[in-house]
Image (tube, rainbow, N blue to C red):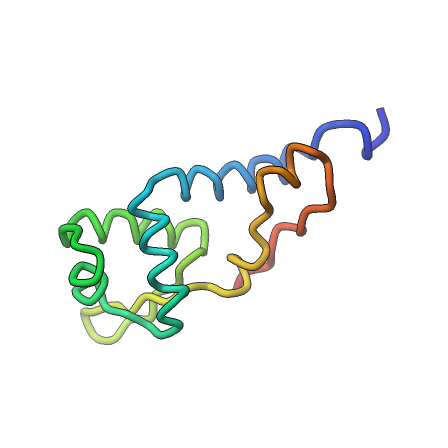
Length: 111
């Protein structure tokens, strides 16, 4: 099978799967949307206030989003400020592109 008619390479498929898994929760989608729309770093407390979700839940979701580099954290003392990682989010392929074999962005080299 040629690369064009075969499945995605395993490593690429695993990377995309981790992205989809990270976004497979409505609260995480809301957090990504909030950070993307604000376009400024936010503390956990600010995200809690804006989302109406509890602090421990927000912290849990931010950890998952940070693992796939959709959000970046900047430490300020004991606090963290979270911001959207524009590079990684802009490379996120649509499900249709991946499934239909259309050109999908290469997994990003996130900073």
